[in-house]
Image (cartoon, rainbow, N blue to C red):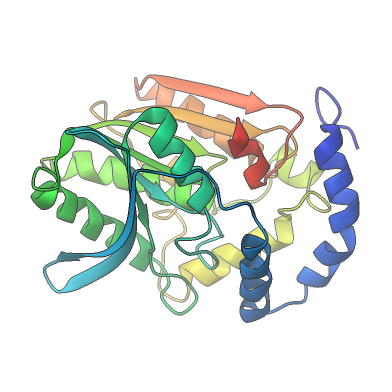
Length: 291
């Protein structure tokens, strides 16, 4: 398997060979079956690093509530990173990126708030975004009571979670919410569900973990009957100069690679400071996040 610049990393090459049969089966599975497979994979994973404090709580704002998991290192007045897991807006929960959130909390010495947002197709667009805003509003009102520093807040996420994080980053600035949003970290984000016709989508349409056909299924489930693909696509949402700087991570063998790159260029055109890193020999899995 060869990509645009170099060979797929040996470990991921072997993984894809072993995963080939399961990938073919997944194309005909319903969401419940896929959810059970995802949970089984998570249960077999290493539990990850110890963190000084980990607790599950409910964030309330007005008449809405959203479950979150808090990862807090030892210390006072720490900055905050709000994390949105991937899973195509359909799969995932607080356990999906638990090891990664533990690592971020320890290595970055920050409070990580992982969001258990509503999932499609039961709760399609814009339910996940509304849940994200509930958590942000809760942080605005409670951060200092918790001993955190809301003036240094980062929004982050992978895949569909990256989509949610960057849309919310723009929304926070547009609505002039009183939170100090300083950066956004987007790991192979979904930025355009209006079109699925990039070079990377066509080159890596099948056989590379995330497939073009599955991504279309995810998008259909998320948008539902009343959603707007344009409003759910960060690439098509006008950004303003005051929006936070961004780190965008893409993978060389990922169907989402080109839209991540194009989105980085789009943000640069809006005069945002953007650091785009492409891991050329990787593909769309959580393995990339070990970097």
